[in-house]
Image (cartoon, rainbow, N blue to C red; front, side, top):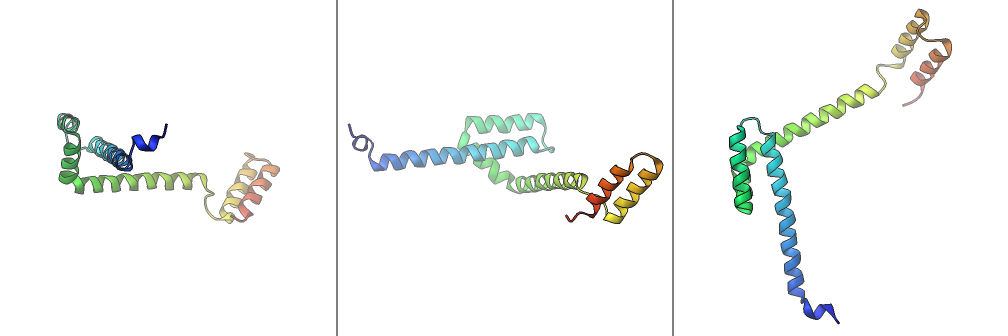
Length: 133
């Protein structure tokens, strides 16, 4: 039993093309739906109408949304990307060392003088502050 004779090359090509088109449609669908739910300028009723339109006429509905809302989609995606970048930056700043080494040692010395930390902890902080980054 040879499989190649029952499934010629053009049918394989057609199957791959259909599969690729389906994957592209899924990607566009998720992009449109995420943009639709990200919007704050439309009411819930208007969002439901878009979803019904996209479900009833799948390819056409997605393409119409992309054509009509392409500027807003790009702006909302860019705004979401900037917000995510700011969250990452603030997280990195919160876990990274603060200030220069002299400032860190000065704060540690104040903690040592007030009795909050002991001499061993002060030395640890000092070594960490002076360690190359």
